[in-house]
Amino acid sequence: MQRITELALVHSRTGVFTRVEVAAWVHGTADAEAALVKRAIVTGEVTRICRGLYCLANRHRVRAIDSLAVAQLIMGPSYVSLEAALAFHGWLPEAVETVTSVCDARSRRFQTPIGTFRFDRVPQQNLFTAVCRVPRADGQAAFVATPLKALADYVSVHKAEWRGVEPLIESLRLPTACIAEIEPAECAGLAANYRSRRVRRFLVGFGREVTRCRSR
Image (cartoon, rainbow, N blue to C red; front, side, top):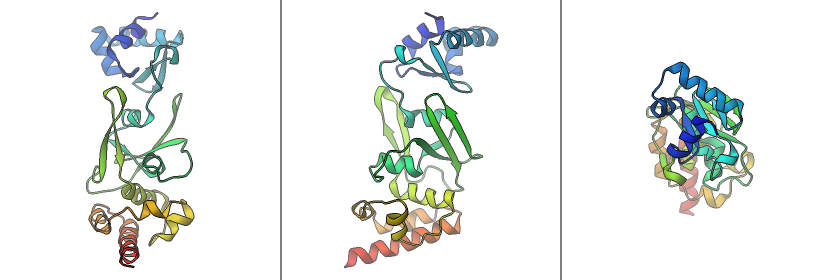
């Protein structure tokens, strides 16, 4: 067994680790650290997820990698949103293959050995408004948008000209019971966080329709 594999088994509960962590474990030169990691990759004991981020091979891990928790390690600061967040909250009827996140940097897409990760830039006043820190296994955590924020991000990224509830049912096939859970007051508060007029129009229109539905 390679030395990096042994160190990761001792120090990494999740089986996922960074180049910075390797430096803390090895206390050697940058070249020596790189050589140890490369050797473990060649033998198949370690997999490179992306630059500076690695994971132990399946046979050395206790459980599967948590994609939601890993997303922010691939590119941060970021939070899980759009389809992935809606699926997490149980709002989408089908499984989501790509982990979709929002960031404040240039949009990027990563095709990795553990799955596909997409990061979209959405201009906001505060990136983490209406984002929850969700505890995961082994002391991990994932930052996940609330359903309403995931919808607002969807409108921004896909430039959807939505003004109310109906497009959510027609385009995303969201259950009406889930939509009814949103408090109208959330819409006005969240609208102030977005710089896009398109998103603000959607949130204001959505809030009005939800208010009318609840008053019936």
